[in-house]
Length: 423
Image 1 (cartoon, one colour):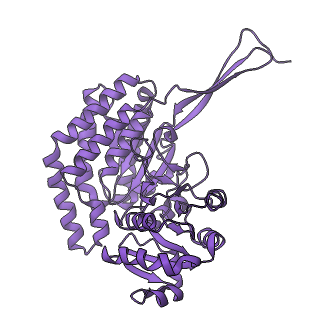
Image 2 (image 1 turned 60 degrees about the vertical axis):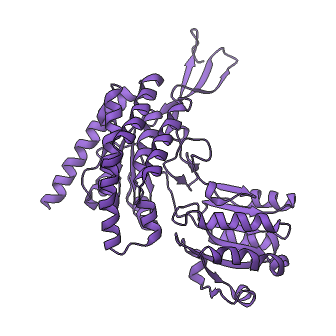
Image 3 (image 1 turned 60 degrees about the horizontal axis):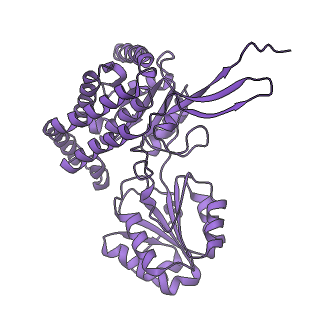
């Protein structure tokens, strides 16, 4: 009990510091935030060896625990990934500052001039697992949008995240901004998450969870503050009868195997029954050569005997591994029925040359991201030109799709008059 009280006191203090930092951040100039972000990127590169040494400890612990290879890939850092983090922060720095932007404006017949203006959300709580780069992405995005942030990474990436956070704090200090604008929860106790979900006595304005199904489920069940939900990435690719075979082979291979452990990786492949004889086997051969296990329905297994029989559970599983479930469907109608039944509303792709099929796919599937003739692995804020993202929101309120700088703002109305009174 005493331990929980200690955690509660610790988290309450983090909340007070974040709320105090939110005020100066909300009015910080674009130039000062830009300077902080560039200093953060430079600090990441200077601290490269410290970060890599810390990451070795995290990876060793994960391997000793028998963690799946796909999760270790998400956890592991190298010089290329550290440079990519620094480049991502620089890309965020180069974005237009959203704070104070006039979103729209209009005049009323009574002479009032009304503006809708972007404002920071305030204090954001980010809860995430495995991927230490989220520490850099989330800290930088929240700062650019004028928000203070409390970061709670997973215990599996604790050493790496602490070193990355130290670089972010260094950047804040160099620019004269409060170092408490970006805070890292210093304990791995699960009670800390519970305190964040309560809102830290009103300090937290919104929670952003980024992780597995169990984490997001807990956040949605317990949170007493608004949540930008990031559900599992149960992503589909549909190969239509009009699809170009060579394009289909290239896209499906990339969509599944480029990185299997990310939320934009394809988990289910649907193929139009009309082209099963011509398209199915060549596409599956490409996947198998790359080391992907195939789980197919009865028809797929008959045409591709190397496939394992899929179970009902496979159609609803986010593997995050080199495994794909495959089914034959009756054209676009069958694809729509399957996706709308099993999708997590994250990302879906159609490979087709028939414009009518593409329009139906875009219009009749309600997922956050829909792609035509492109890999689902483009489901990423950096690829959308947002610099980076905290996650892919699959809900429908406020933020949807990649949560970037603009999605981390709210708005207020400024109304200018010249003496008007209401009758």
